[in-house]
Image (cartoon, rainbow, N blue to C red; front, side, top):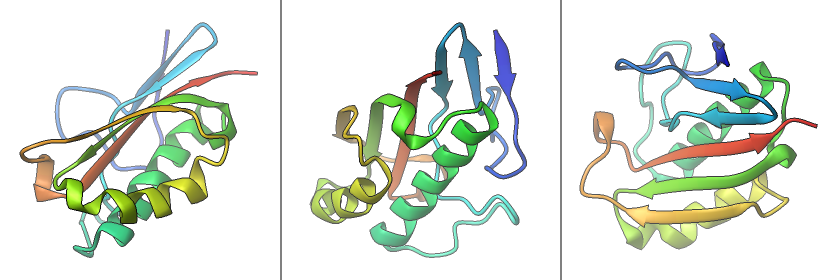
Length: 124
């Protein structure tokens, strides 16, 4: 196994890594909409936060040598299911290959954010 580490995505805020490569598979930790340059959540709209979370997933994938097109499964967490349609609009711009997905509403997310995205990808 190889740990994924990049300064282009937020550092882990707990006892975990940004992701791992194991064999052909890449597993990303859930990515929050945190700006990796300053560690802050800069806006409180679902559109902004979904964009930032997706970009952070992309940076972890890139550090492992993959792209969004290599993703086979995502799990998405929303603080409010009323944001589902707006989240999907942003999400669909990044995950154009339409990987398998679970999307659930949760009571709260770290840092009080509106969404979080994790991914599983396959190396080509």
